[in-house]
Length: 509
Ligand SMILES: *[C@@H]1O[C@H](CO)[C@@H](O)[C@H](O)[C@H]1NC(C)=O
Ligand SMILES: *[C@@H]1O[C@H](CO)[C@@H](O)[C@H](O)[C@H]1NC(C)=O
Ligand SMILES: *[C@@H]1O[C@H](CO)[C@@H](O)[C@H](O)[C@H]1NC(C)=O
Ligand SMILES: *[C@@H]1O[C@H](CO)[C@@H](O)[C@H](O)[C@H]1NC(C)=O
Ligand SMILES: *[C@@H]1O[C@H](CO)[C@@H](O)[C@H](O)[C@H]1NC(C)=O
Ligand SMILES: *[C@@H]1O[C@H](CO)[C@@H](O)[C@H](O)[C@H]1NC(C)=O
Image (cartoon, rainbow, N blue to C red; front, side, top):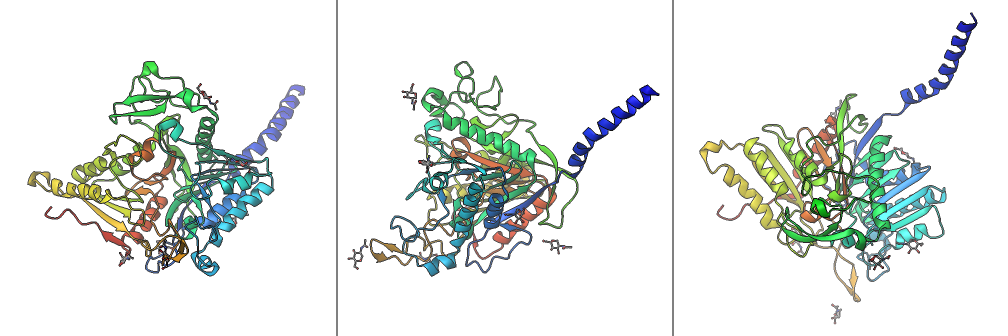
């Protein structure tokens, strides 16, 4: 009797102790995702895709909802327009021009961060040194007089010889995340076309992005001259500077990584493909799309440069390639980028880089896939892009060059021209009216994503070698059917719009 009472008292205690935890886990909210876009003003012929959120509202909400911690990875800050600074691309535009351009969106995002900082939220910023004319000034203003705001500048050039922090990532309260192409710039909200993903109540994903942020912060705390080597990189046939723990350094000379979390794979040079990269197996609700399923699906993160990745996370280059190769037989891959080059752009020794173009040709040949690529044509277009795109289009000729190939696949490429792209810059230069209709560095399709018939990949890297090997970038990808299908809709709206014009094959080819 006595004993039995003991047992029931014990059970009662167990019930009391366990039940809050049980109810917590049974009510723990499901991860939700929305695709996020910025659509420049004055694009009347672009049909809107329903259920997509705007970058401005998502960034405001991330700051607005944060109660304890807000982390931001930024290349630069220009949330506040500067029509009165003669060095700015905003110079000379009137207040009514700026209103028409939507510049107040930047101010409201800035105010939301400031309000979070004033609520004593711990704000942690990792950034590149910013851009002309005011560099780190906005984040310094946020940090000024607020011990809860940390503003860290990390120069990847000290570690890789060139390269920058180029990821655009926000994490709020270790559970809500934005990853995408939008800079912390007012123009990224209303004058540049952007694509990103907003994840809400996804602590598993947030904690892995947080690990990457910590790796960046650790790097910023170290003296790079003690941890870098200049080596012959046999994979890219280039002599270049890398962190001493890089797999481009011969094993015998490689140092132990000082990063809190890191990959160890002995006996390899470079960063070979991981055969079973880490995947989150989680249910993601998609309130912005009616195809929402309650099924679990696989999702992933990928990172660049490879030396900053950790665990079994794949490099960003591999994640792009695997997305291209995920296409079904006879299916379609859609790819969107600002810049495209099958080479490097910023390193001294030019590197030839066919990783993505090879993957594209491979699926065109053997899987008879159609690969559609949208590349931005804008005020700062890279001059030899056209030759590389034409060389990729030549795959169509090669594929059908023998009747034994039974070639059914093809590559199609279009330039995306946001109207006004060739009239950007300050309104006044050295006292004279320029005739520019829009501010500098605007009117461009800046999104970086790929979507096959089964897998969606949303990132921050341009499709140029440097971004994958010397630049800090982050992508989120998923096999979630609703996200795949909505990203296809976004691409098709652009592809079928009058703003997309075909890249012509070489004359005579
Ligand atoms: C918090 O986020 C939700 C959507 O995720 C949004 O509806 C709400 O307005 C946000 N709250 C604040 C204060 O920003
Ligand atoms: C961070 O902000 C403080 C306070 O405004 C400023 O003095 C400092 O220069 C800033 N640091 C960087 C790296 O911008
Ligand atoms: C970094 O290390 C180098 C080499 O030991 C040294 O000369 C330099 O002063 C160090 N820099 C800092 C900021 O500590
Ligand atoms: C679901 O969404 C698609 C595309 O957004 C739309 O064409 C369709 O009518 C929607 N269906 C329902 C039942 O709302
Ligand atoms: C800008 O581009 C449009 C469309 O490509 C063209 O019609 C126009 O002449 C260009 N204007 C200038 C100033 O180059
Ligand atoms: C500005 O305009 C004046 C008068 O037309 C001209 O003399 C001057 O060269 C112009 N300056 C520039 C930088 O174009």
